[in-house]
Image (cartoon, rainbow, N blue to C red; front, side):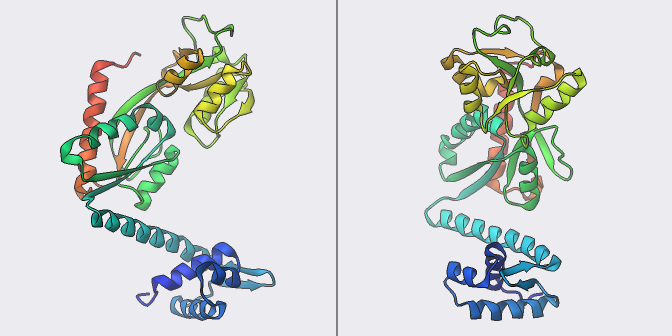
Length: 309
């Protein structure tokens, strides 16, 4: 297997993605005959067919699908190496890739990272942040695409180390003229008599709300589904529905819109977030410094605003 070269893997991936040797050749700027020769050599090297030729193109075999998965991981790693080395070439002496959920990014992470980068000792560190759902954060860490990740601590984190980060509380967001707007106390079950604005089902909050509705013996009815917090707030402002969102993430915009933010009193509505990593011993120095900073920031925040049961 030492004879597999990266160019052949890149061309193999291009053929699988385009479904055609000819189209892959156009994309990569290489003759189709040259790609065919490399693919034949690749199949000879691994000792099994990788592609099935059909009238309208090619599709990977089972072995080809497995090789394609490895090829994507290897090529992504090469891209990260190139970006990291380019950073050193222009004077960046530390590069941290950080994955986080939308709630964390909207609430506190951006401010914590900004505080970190403003310190003179960190001026040569670059931090790239990417939004993913909690399961995507965990998967990215396991695949090695990031040094640190922050997700809901209820996510399956087997095989990863973690440290506590910040917490938030889910709240009902309602129009000021809505019957719920004047409530002093509110549970999630109280909101199920009205239509909701839903977020993508792949994110953590919708799954949590569906389970809570089932436990309450009621149906969670969505009038509309949107892709982000801001769109949900706009629907609420129009008086079309109510929404359940992280209070810390949406409170500033909700105030601008004149919406009522009613924290849910349910115990499960308070969420704890975790900073996850693969191995503390192999963490790059810049990532280690960021980890320490995020933990300290979370500790200061917890001291100023203790969690209310």
